[in-house]
Image: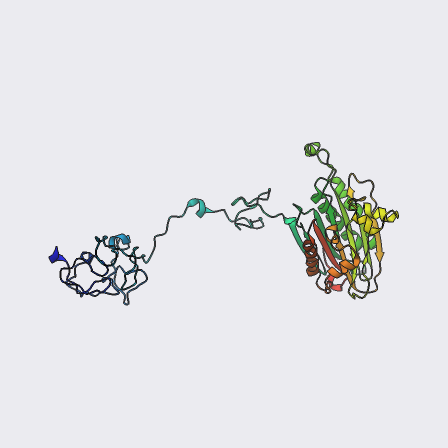
Length: 438
């Protein structure tokens, strides 16, 4: 065997000088018998401690291109190139991961130039089919279709409800609605619109509804009421109906829409026989170049905030609530009434079990520009007085209604967000570019 070993003057690993007959390097323990025999037709050239043709230590590449064989064994496992572990020797520990001379690690095989790709898992590779255009796609995996129950058919992720946070900008007006921080769903709804009066002047409107949580399907009630009121306004205003009369008719239409929700099969309420019929409050405003009209049933409100903050703001609605009745009857002052736990008990609402329908409407002719804030109690609970509301409204609200609505919703959330919060911002007077469709 000795005669078959290549004669080396230095260790191929650490370049330590060798003596004739050495089987292992005395410095690093390299097994010299693992060095391939020198071919007759090429010179022996050690490159960075590796024999010609590799394998190259990890992190080191040949300085010149080396021809490598091709075929089924050319890219074989690197284990074929590893020398067998040598027996214990004196000096450095044999098999030490780092050669003290070169600093190259030898505790794992050199990594191949290419890696064979693992066959894909058909369960993953197939994936869900691309949803058809218009299909609601999961917000988590962005690939699965969302089923009617609100869950992704691919990953099972529950989707956020569409009404948890809603924003809309329609010409010069805007509205934002948010679930708030305590409620499990958003039971508010709003509708915005703009149209033309018979004389060609523009008119804008906003309708905001607040579902009564103690009733069944309050979210359905608020949505039905806001849509029905908007449809009525879009039909009446272009025909020349006075805005105040149009607002009255819109509230009546909204009431009918909510009443119709109670006409459900008897089996639909078997599990909740003691709950009230669907119900909600409503408040709305119509703005023209010279007129401001408000209408309401319940405790949602309208505030007037002039652009010139030296002019006083005002609340334009009176609540249908226990507190408002106590104040109107002279039994309590406003501070005492609204501090009572019964303060927010409403005395007027839309719904099949309402005592009677008594729409309230009023019209105003402001002599200066400003903004109309239409909102639910989820906002005004944190800015009840007109001065407080005006302070919360940004100074550029008329020019940036959507931004202002976002700021007002943020004001309510910062205050605690105990209820759903919805607010619409309508500039007065209506700018001419506001004409269009809802």
